[in-house]
Length: 255
Image 1 (cartoon, rainbow, N blue to C red):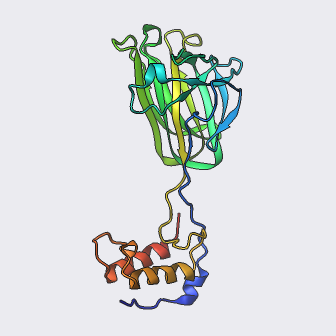
Image 2 (cartoon, one colour; image 1 turned 60 degrees about the vertical axis):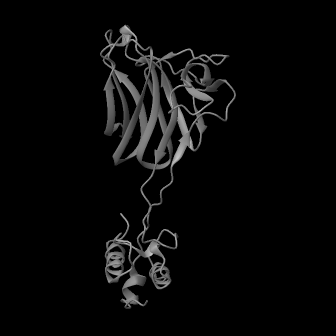
Image 3 (spheres, rainbow, N blue to C red; image 1 turned 90 degrees about the vertical axis):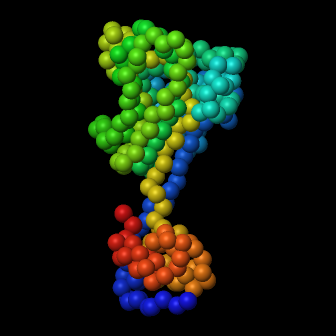
């Protein structure tokens, strides 16, 4: 099934650089239990600025076996979690106070998440616990919860997630404890830190990061071959409307 030709000169003039989806994930499972330093990298993500207290000295990150404490949580990816300032030699976690840490990768992110396993203890009631996306020192997106204080089940889980804005790095941070500056943090460990980039530009069919005649030719080959990858309007059929949808996205470029 053929499709009509379009202006080749116009196509060749298009030079949009398209972002590809490229998630990095740190699960801390490739390390033996122990200290990792004040800065370390895992899964393409670099961690730094680990603080117990606001304005305090940086402490070390560590990898700790969590199988004896949080295996019942489906969000836990065995065997390790990231701990801050201390680690346990066995499989039972010692939850350590955390005020702040920073994570970044080589490219900006557009979404992120972290699984936080925390203790429901009365001293931390009212603390605001946040994951923030930063551009410079400015917070452009955040996801937060308020520590409720004492809970009947000691170990709790919250997945903090960011989306909708482009950021340079992420920050886990606690604010406003019952004794500011002393209890400005929570007892927590961390798993599955993910930073993802922009979604793929689906009209960049040859994957070279630019929109050119070759993407149009690749689309025409898919369409003529009856491949549903050319079903750009999502109705399960290949029609003129798919070609028009492809051409409209192509003309709009990859943002």
